[in-house]
Image (cartoon, rainbow, N blue to C red):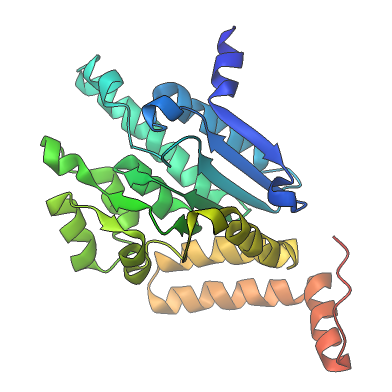
Length: 266
């Protein structure tokens, strides 16, 4: 098997996943390693996500094969090359992947089962939305190995309250799916046998909306979060004014006035 084929096999891509047109599911495929983020898997995810940016996909789902969502970085691989330069490059590669998720025009949903630990929990936090089975568990457990989960702390502190995020980071303790939902890390919790159906319901709801509004809205949401309130309002007002000029918005408003369903051409 050549290198390209090996990389491709680390991520399985399903088009129109869950029977929903426009939904693409990327499944991390290292089940024997609990989908640990090896260099190869990081590269495979990066390639797959970058390729979707200009595609017709409406929603992207990230899932894990086997018994877990993702166990974080591949510690055996990391320990085999102990140099500052290697670690700097590795974490820069991971950061690029995480930022690609945020910058993707399509909403990205994490489909979580089993464990999501360290960089795996980071991956959940970076996805726009997350649906988990009721048996899923979450932790940023690097501190238990003497390694504070610094990069996972970035999205974790932007999802949870400061004290809740810092407790996870300082203790390395697991939280269950119910607590993860309560803390704001995930959106929905369902029994394992309902997980795919719940992901499909959420994706279907998003796919029913105009692509222009969803894409512009996602971009605006993250940009304004990093701004002061006055600048955020200025950006939001400009974004909304431009959105209002879209044919989809004009049709949607007219349909509301006419008391009918909008006729969006996708």
